Length: 344
Image (cartoon, rainbow, N blue to C red; front, side, top):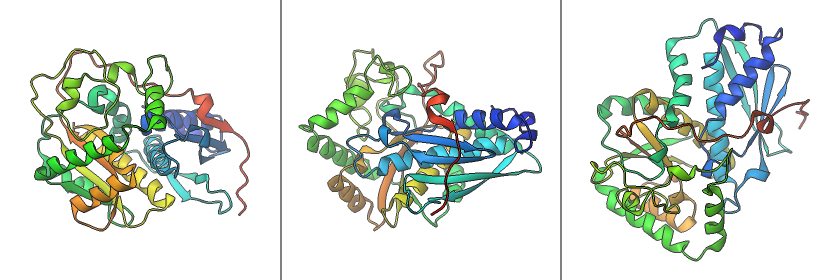
């Protein structure tokens, strides 16, 4: 967790660099497609600028929508990290009209105090990673769901992003949509090559750890998740016959990159709130990556908003020792110090 005492001199003195580095390091625990981490932070004095790192955008994400969702998540994580350090983030989104890759400028105002809730939310950034099997393995049902659902709706709001909790009886149709998506990509060699690269066992600072992949038996018990390369890992969580996770959907009225960024911020808020409540989470995006499956998902849910992300929420039974965090790129690769031109 950030050292809130170190934040007292962020604007005036030597504490500035360390607090920003700590906040960015924590923010970069945000989820991203295949753990590709498509963001670049630039610090200019006491400010931060967030850019889309186009060299990290996946070939299968030609519209960069998924990358913008990832960057929205890291932006909200940054806001949470700085609040725990005693600073409120003032975010100006897409501040440079002639540079659409400049996603946000963030300036900071000192807070009068740091609340326990702000500290717990920053701690949740690290706690969220404790379930490495969440990519595909089943959850038990979340308890006390009614109380947390209202909190989640309050966090997301209703201006830019809509939150729906999909009824349990819809799961078979969601599983059919997932199977259709996989069928449509069966002969997409570019997609499978990219997936294989991001799940390769030799990657050390990015991608999905090979040990987080599951066996065929484990994968079959979920139904709505992406089909990753299968491994020979032994079957785990055998006490759960099937997945009982709640399935949430984030959607937007329009489909601009600003909508995708806002959706990523809402995704971060949902993940952290669920983590604070003791739930395991797993974002599910493959059902929105192809236009045909996205349209099918919209038809299944019965409203006109555009689906952006699904999130599985439940309880992950303990497997014993808490596994290490998934890898992240070195801070030097995602944070630079330089002057940023902000003129339109």
